[in-house]
Image (cartoon, rainbow, N blue to C red; front, top):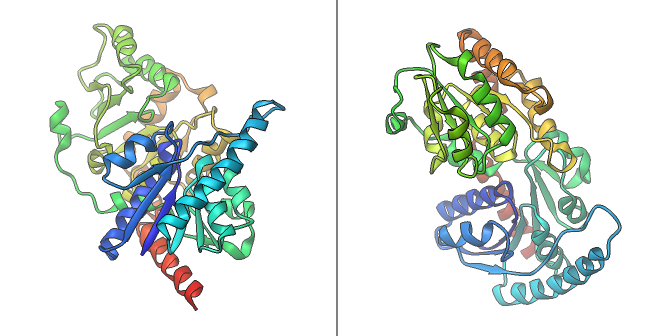
Length: 366
Protein backbone atom coordinates (compact mmCIF):
# COMPACT_ATOMS: atom_id res chain seq x y z
CA UNK A 1 0.00 0.00 0.00
CA UNK A 2 1.18 3.51 -0.86
CA UNK A 3 -0.46 5.52 1.91
CA UNK A 4 -0.43 9.30 2.26
CA UNK A 5 -1.67 10.61 5.63
CA UNK A 6 -2.36 14.21 6.58
CA UNK A 7 -3.44 15.68 9.90
CA UNK A 8 -2.01 18.16 12.32
CA UNK A 9 -2.11 20.96 14.81
CA UNK A 10 -2.88 18.92 17.92
CA UNK A 11 -2.01 15.48 19.27
CA UNK A 12 -5.69 14.52 18.86
CA UNK A 13 -5.19 14.56 15.09
CA UNK A 14 -1.63 13.22 15.02
CA UNK A 15 -1.67 10.22 17.39
CA UNK A 16 -4.58 8.42 15.67
CA UNK A 17 -2.72 8.91 12.37
CA UNK A 18 0.44 7.36 13.82
CA UNK A 19 -1.58 4.46 15.26
CA UNK A 20 -3.09 3.80 11.84
CA UNK A 21 0.33 3.93 10.17
CA UNK A 22 1.59 1.46 12.78
CA UNK A 23 -1.26 -0.97 11.98
CA UNK A 24 -0.71 -0.68 8.21
CA UNK A 25 3.01 -1.41 8.61
CA UNK A 26 2.28 -4.47 10.75
CA UNK A 27 -0.19 -5.86 8.22
CA UNK A 28 1.75 -4.83 5.10
CA UNK A 29 5.41 -4.32 6.09
CA UNK A 30 6.47 -3.24 2.59
CA UNK A 31 3.99 -0.31 2.53
CA UNK A 32 5.29 3.13 1.54
CA UNK A 33 4.08 5.93 3.85
CA UNK A 34 4.21 9.71 3.50
CA UNK A 35 2.88 12.15 6.10
CA UNK A 36 1.98 15.72 5.09
CA UNK A 37 1.65 18.38 7.80
CA UNK A 38 2.64 21.98 8.51
CA UNK A 39 5.96 23.34 9.69
CA UNK A 40 4.23 24.98 12.71
CA UNK A 41 2.10 22.13 14.09
CA UNK A 42 3.12 19.49 16.63
CA UNK A 43 3.39 17.00 13.75
CA UNK A 44 6.56 18.79 12.62
CA UNK A 45 8.41 17.19 15.55
CA UNK A 46 6.33 14.10 16.44
CA UNK A 47 6.16 12.55 12.95
CA UNK A 48 9.87 12.76 11.99
CA UNK A 49 10.75 11.51 15.50
CA UNK A 50 8.62 8.43 14.72
CA UNK A 51 10.79 7.78 11.65
CA UNK A 52 8.04 8.53 9.12
CA UNK A 53 8.80 10.45 5.89
CA UNK A 54 7.37 13.95 6.31
CA UNK A 55 6.58 16.91 4.04
CA UNK A 56 5.03 20.28 4.88
CA UNK A 57 2.68 22.74 3.25
CA UNK A 58 1.79 26.23 4.43
CA UNK A 59 -1.82 26.87 5.47
CA UNK A 60 -3.82 28.58 8.22
CA UNK A 61 -7.33 28.38 9.66
CA UNK A 62 -10.26 30.72 9.17
CA UNK A 63 -10.98 33.37 11.82
CA UNK A 64 -14.44 33.05 13.32
CA UNK A 65 -15.23 36.71 12.63
CA UNK A 66 -15.01 38.79 9.44
CA UNK A 67 -11.34 39.50 8.94
CA UNK A 68 -8.87 40.46 6.24
CA UNK A 69 -6.85 37.49 7.47
CA UNK A 70 -9.52 35.26 5.93
CA UNK A 71 -8.59 36.57 2.48
CA UNK A 72 -5.03 35.44 3.20
CA UNK A 73 -6.45 32.09 4.38
CA UNK A 74 -8.31 31.59 1.08
CA UNK A 75 -5.14 32.47 -0.86
CA UNK A 76 -3.06 30.06 1.23
CA UNK A 77 -5.67 27.31 0.85
CA UNK A 78 -5.66 27.59 -2.95
CA UNK A 79 -1.87 27.71 -2.98
CA UNK A 80 -1.63 24.69 -0.62
CA UNK A 81 -4.02 22.70 -2.84
CA UNK A 82 -1.62 23.38 -5.73
CA UNK A 83 1.35 22.26 -3.57
CA UNK A 84 -0.57 19.18 -2.40
CA UNK A 85 -1.27 18.16 -6.01
CA UNK A 86 2.46 18.30 -6.74
CA UNK A 87 3.19 16.06 -3.72
CA UNK A 88 0.42 13.64 -4.77
CA UNK A 89 1.70 13.42 -8.35
CA UNK A 90 5.21 12.73 -7.07
CA UNK A 91 4.27 10.15 -4.39
CA UNK A 92 1.40 8.49 -6.31
CA UNK A 93 -0.56 7.19 -3.28
CA UNK A 94 -3.09 4.36 -3.57
CA UNK A 95 -5.21 6.08 -0.91
CA UNK A 96 -5.16 9.35 1.09
CA UNK A 97 -6.23 9.66 4.73
CA UNK A 98 -7.06 12.84 6.63
CA UNK A 99 -7.27 12.86 10.43
CA UNK A 100 -8.25 16.50 10.97
CA UNK A 101 -6.65 19.92 11.20
CA UNK A 102 -6.50 22.58 8.48
CA UNK A 103 -3.59 20.94 6.68
CA UNK A 104 -5.56 17.85 5.73
CA UNK A 105 -8.27 20.07 4.19
CA UNK A 106 -6.01 21.02 1.27
CA UNK A 107 -4.36 17.60 0.92
CA UNK A 108 -7.51 15.46 0.99
CA UNK A 109 -9.44 17.93 -1.19
CA UNK A 110 -6.64 17.84 -3.78
CA UNK A 111 -6.63 14.02 -3.71
CA UNK A 112 -10.40 13.84 -4.18
CA UNK A 113 -10.20 16.18 -7.18
CA UNK A 114 -7.50 13.91 -8.64
CA UNK A 115 -9.81 10.86 -8.22
CA UNK A 116 -7.51 9.22 -5.65
CA UNK A 117 -9.46 7.18 -3.04
CA UNK A 118 -9.93 9.27 0.12
CA UNK A 119 -10.88 8.61 3.74
CA UNK A 120 -11.22 10.99 6.70
CA UNK A 121 -11.38 10.14 10.38
CA UNK A 122 -13.34 12.17 12.94
CA UNK A 123 -12.13 11.56 16.50
CA UNK A 124 -14.70 13.67 18.36
CA UNK A 125 -18.45 13.50 18.88
CA UNK A 126 -18.86 16.89 17.16
CA UNK A 127 -17.19 17.20 13.75
CA UNK A 128 -14.50 19.80 13.11
CA UNK A 129 -14.92 22.39 10.36
CA UNK A 130 -12.29 20.76 8.10
CA UNK A 131 -13.93 17.34 8.18
CA UNK A 132 -17.38 18.86 7.57
CA UNK A 133 -15.98 20.56 4.47
CA UNK A 134 -14.18 17.41 3.26
CA UNK A 135 -17.21 15.16 3.84
CA UNK A 136 -18.69 16.40 0.53
CA UNK A 137 -15.69 15.15 -1.47
CA UNK A 138 -14.28 12.01 0.22
CA UNK A 139 -15.23 8.38 -0.34
CA UNK A 140 -15.61 7.27 3.28
CA UNK A 141 -15.73 8.82 6.77
CA UNK A 142 -14.70 6.95 9.92
CA UNK A 143 -16.19 8.04 13.27
CA UNK A 144 -15.29 7.28 16.89
CA UNK A 145 -18.59 8.38 18.49
CA UNK A 146 -21.98 7.44 17.05
CA UNK A 147 -23.18 11.01 17.73
CA UNK A 148 -20.78 12.30 15.05
CA UNK A 149 -22.74 10.52 12.29
CA UNK A 150 -25.30 13.37 12.18
CA UNK A 151 -22.58 15.72 10.89
CA UNK A 152 -21.96 13.77 7.68
CA UNK A 153 -23.66 12.20 4.63
CA UNK A 154 -25.08 8.94 6.01
CA UNK A 155 -24.01 6.76 3.08
CA UNK A 156 -20.32 7.60 3.65
CA UNK A 157 -20.17 7.02 7.41
CA UNK A 158 -18.55 3.94 8.99
CA UNK A 159 -18.12 3.46 12.74
CA UNK A 160 -14.45 2.56 13.18
CA UNK A 161 -13.47 3.80 16.65
CA UNK A 162 -10.20 5.63 17.31
CA UNK A 163 -6.99 3.87 16.08
CA UNK A 164 -5.17 5.05 19.22
CA UNK A 165 -7.29 2.61 21.25
CA UNK A 166 -5.76 -0.37 19.46
CA UNK A 167 -2.23 0.79 20.29
CA UNK A 168 -2.85 0.73 24.05
CA UNK A 169 -5.43 -2.09 24.29
CA UNK A 170 -2.92 -4.87 24.86
CA UNK A 171 -0.74 -3.05 27.40
CA UNK A 172 -0.04 -4.87 30.68
CA UNK A 173 1.22 -3.63 34.03
CA UNK A 174 4.98 -3.09 34.03
CA UNK A 175 5.39 -1.81 37.62
CA UNK A 176 5.94 1.76 36.44
CA UNK A 177 4.42 3.11 39.69
CA UNK A 178 7.58 2.05 41.52
CA UNK A 179 9.54 4.52 39.35
CA UNK A 180 7.62 7.33 41.07
CA UNK A 181 7.89 6.05 44.62
CA UNK A 182 4.34 4.66 44.65
CA UNK A 183 3.17 1.29 45.91
CA UNK A 184 2.30 -1.19 43.15
CA UNK A 185 -0.27 -2.83 45.43
CA UNK A 186 -2.30 0.29 46.32
CA UNK A 187 -5.18 1.67 44.28
CA UNK A 188 -3.97 4.72 42.37
CA UNK A 189 -5.71 7.83 41.10
CA UNK A 190 -4.01 9.60 38.17
CA UNK A 191 -4.71 13.33 37.85
CA UNK A 192 -3.56 14.49 34.44
CA UNK A 193 -4.73 17.57 32.52
CA UNK A 194 -3.02 16.68 29.23
CA UNK A 195 0.57 17.02 28.04
CA UNK A 196 0.60 20.77 28.80
CA UNK A 197 -1.45 20.40 31.97
CA UNK A 198 -4.73 22.15 32.85
CA UNK A 199 -4.56 25.16 35.17
CA UNK A 200 -7.98 24.72 36.82
CA UNK A 201 -7.56 20.95 37.37
CA UNK A 202 -4.15 21.63 38.94
CA UNK A 203 -5.53 24.30 41.28
CA UNK A 204 -8.50 22.17 42.34
CA UNK A 205 -6.21 19.20 43.03
CA UNK A 206 -3.99 21.28 45.32
CA UNK A 207 -7.14 22.59 47.08
CA UNK A 208 -8.21 18.94 47.54
CA UNK A 209 -4.96 17.88 49.28
CA UNK A 210 -6.26 18.18 52.87
CA UNK A 211 -9.30 16.04 51.94
CA UNK A 212 -7.20 13.41 50.14
CA UNK A 213 -4.61 13.06 52.91
CA UNK A 214 -4.60 9.77 54.78
CA UNK A 215 -6.83 7.89 52.34
CA UNK A 216 -6.15 4.21 51.62
CA UNK A 217 -5.45 5.05 47.95
CA UNK A 218 -2.58 7.03 46.44
CA UNK A 219 -2.59 9.91 43.96
CA UNK A 220 -0.19 10.51 41.06
CA UNK A 221 -0.62 14.18 40.19
CA UNK A 222 0.90 15.18 36.81
CA UNK A 223 0.84 18.96 36.47
CA UNK A 224 2.30 19.46 32.99
CA UNK A 225 5.82 20.91 32.72
CA UNK A 226 4.54 24.46 32.12
CA UNK A 227 2.71 24.57 35.47
CA UNK A 228 5.05 22.50 37.64
CA UNK A 229 7.08 25.24 39.35
CA UNK A 230 3.99 27.31 40.15
CA UNK A 231 2.22 24.27 41.63
CA UNK A 232 5.32 23.37 43.65
CA UNK A 233 5.29 26.88 45.14
CA UNK A 234 1.55 26.60 45.89
CA UNK A 235 2.03 23.28 47.69
CA UNK A 236 5.05 24.28 49.78
CA UNK A 237 5.38 21.77 52.64
CA UNK A 238 1.70 20.79 52.54
CA UNK A 239 1.83 17.71 50.33
CA UNK A 240 0.12 14.61 51.78
CA UNK A 241 2.30 11.49 51.99
CA UNK A 242 -0.06 9.55 49.70
CA UNK A 243 0.36 12.09 46.86
CA UNK A 244 3.24 12.22 44.36
CA UNK A 245 3.60 15.29 42.12
CA UNK A 246 5.34 15.05 38.74
CA UNK A 247 5.68 17.58 35.89
CA UNK A 248 5.40 15.04 33.07
CA UNK A 249 5.43 11.28 32.45
CA UNK A 250 7.05 10.16 29.19
CA UNK A 251 5.09 7.42 27.44
CA UNK A 252 2.02 7.99 29.59
CA UNK A 253 0.03 5.02 28.15
CA UNK A 254 2.53 2.54 29.65
CA UNK A 255 1.50 3.53 33.18
CA UNK A 256 -2.26 3.34 32.55
CA UNK A 257 -2.70 -0.43 33.22
CA UNK A 258 -1.76 0.29 36.87
CA UNK A 259 -4.27 3.13 37.33
CA UNK A 260 -7.58 2.63 39.16
CA UNK A 261 -9.16 5.97 38.24
CA UNK A 262 -8.23 8.89 35.96
CA UNK A 263 -9.11 12.54 36.53
CA UNK A 264 -8.59 14.53 33.35
CA UNK A 265 -9.83 16.19 30.19
CA UNK A 266 -12.14 14.54 27.66
CA UNK A 267 -10.06 14.78 24.51
CA UNK A 268 -10.57 12.04 21.93
CA UNK A 269 -7.13 10.47 22.43
CA UNK A 270 -7.52 10.30 26.21
CA UNK A 271 -10.96 8.68 25.90
CA UNK A 272 -9.66 6.18 23.35
CA UNK A 273 -6.98 5.10 25.84
CA UNK A 274 -9.37 5.06 28.82
CA UNK A 275 -11.95 2.91 27.02
CA UNK A 276 -9.37 0.58 25.45
CA UNK A 277 -8.15 -0.36 28.94
CA UNK A 278 -11.48 0.00 30.77
CA UNK A 279 -10.41 2.63 33.32
CA UNK A 280 -13.03 4.45 35.46
CA UNK A 281 -12.70 8.21 34.99
CA UNK A 282 -13.73 11.61 36.30
CA UNK A 283 -13.80 13.90 33.29
CA UNK A 284 -13.41 17.68 33.35
CA UNK A 285 -14.09 18.78 29.75
CA UNK A 286 -12.11 21.76 28.51
CA UNK A 287 -14.48 24.68 27.90
CA UNK A 288 -11.96 26.25 25.51
CA UNK A 289 -12.34 23.87 22.55
CA UNK A 290 -14.34 24.25 19.33
CA UNK A 291 -18.08 23.50 19.62
CA UNK A 292 -17.56 22.40 23.24
CA UNK A 293 -16.79 18.96 21.78
CA UNK A 294 -15.10 17.65 24.94
CA UNK A 295 -18.37 17.98 26.88
CA UNK A 296 -20.11 15.93 24.18
CA UNK A 297 -17.26 13.37 24.27
CA UNK A 298 -17.53 13.08 28.07
CA UNK A 299 -21.32 12.89 28.01
CA UNK A 300 -21.16 9.80 25.81
CA UNK A 301 -19.21 7.95 28.54
CA UNK A 302 -21.43 9.34 31.31
CA UNK A 303 -24.50 8.08 29.41
CA UNK A 304 -22.85 4.66 29.21
CA UNK A 305 -22.22 4.71 33.01
CA UNK A 306 -18.51 4.53 32.27
CA UNK A 307 -17.45 7.91 33.70
CA UNK A 308 -18.38 10.81 35.97
CA UNK A 309 -18.20 14.41 34.77
CA UNK A 310 -17.55 17.75 36.51
CA UNK A 311 -17.92 20.96 34.52
CA UNK A 312 -14.90 23.22 34.97
CA UNK A 313 -17.21 25.94 36.37
CA UNK A 314 -18.20 23.53 39.19
CA UNK A 315 -14.67 22.29 39.85
CA UNK A 316 -13.02 23.04 43.20
CA UNK A 317 -11.07 21.13 45.82
CA UNK A 318 -14.17 19.96 47.68
CA UNK A 319 -16.18 18.80 44.63
CA UNK A 320 -13.15 16.98 43.21
CA UNK A 321 -12.17 15.26 46.47
CA UNK A 322 -15.76 14.18 47.14
CA UNK A 323 -16.12 12.59 43.71
CA UNK A 324 -12.73 10.86 43.89
CA UNK A 325 -13.60 9.52 47.33
CA UNK A 326 -17.06 8.40 46.24
CA UNK A 327 -15.58 6.37 43.37
CA UNK A 328 -12.54 5.02 45.21
CA UNK A 329 -14.54 3.86 48.24
CA UNK A 330 -17.09 1.94 46.15
CA UNK A 331 -15.54 -1.15 44.54
CA UNK A 332 -18.88 -2.12 42.96
CA UNK A 333 -19.14 1.28 41.25
CA UNK A 334 -15.54 0.92 40.01
CA UNK A 335 -16.27 -2.49 38.52
CA UNK A 336 -19.42 -1.28 36.72
CA UNK A 337 -17.53 1.71 35.28
CA UNK A 338 -14.61 -0.50 34.28
CA UNK A 339 -16.86 -2.91 32.37
CA UNK A 340 -18.84 -0.12 30.71
CA UNK A 341 -15.71 1.78 29.72
CA UNK A 342 -14.32 -1.37 28.12
CA UNK A 343 -17.61 -1.89 26.26
CA UNK A 344 -17.39 1.66 24.91
CA UNK A 345 -13.89 1.03 23.53
CA UNK A 346 -13.02 -0.22 20.06
CA UNK A 347 -9.82 -2.19 20.38
CA UNK A 348 -9.54 -3.12 16.69
CA UNK A 349 -10.13 0.40 15.32
CA UNK A 350 -6.87 0.60 13.34
CA UNK A 351 -7.53 -2.80 11.72
CA UNK A 352 -11.05 -1.71 10.78
CA UNK A 353 -9.67 1.36 9.02
CA UNK A 354 -6.87 -0.60 7.32
CA UNK A 355 -9.46 -3.05 5.92
CA UNK A 356 -11.58 -0.14 4.73
CA UNK A 357 -8.60 1.44 2.95
CA UNK A 358 -7.87 -1.87 1.20
CA UNK A 359 -11.50 -2.00 0.02
CA UNK A 360 -11.28 1.56 -1.34
CA UNK A 361 -8.10 0.73 -3.24
CA UNK A 362 -9.64 -2.48 -4.68
CA UNK A 363 -12.81 -0.64 -5.77
CA UNK A 364 -10.76 2.10 -7.44
CA UNK A 365 -8.70 -0.40 -9.44
CA UNK A 366 -11.71 -2.19 -10.94
